[in-house]
Amino acid sequence: MKLNSQSRRKFEELFIIKAFKDSSFRTALIENPKIAIAQHFGTQLPIEIEIRVLQETDKVLYVVLPHT
Image 1 (cartoon, one colour):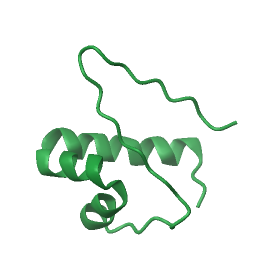
Image 2: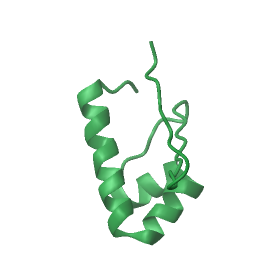
Image 3: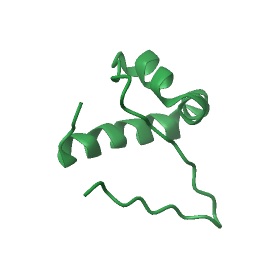
Image 4: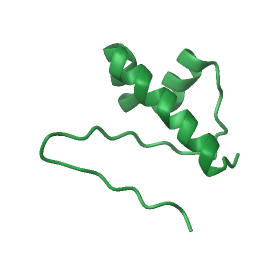
């Protein structure tokens, strides 16, 4: 599964909005992103795709560099 940058941003936006509104989804997304996404969005991600979810704090900022 390969998403173009526009599709990926849209998915990320949906996850972030849902996580801000629903603390149980946020917790599930951090603990097991694939299961949380499958349960809440009905989207089964391929086994070869790995998702890591990190939550920033007021003292820690994450910068993600895209795959080249």
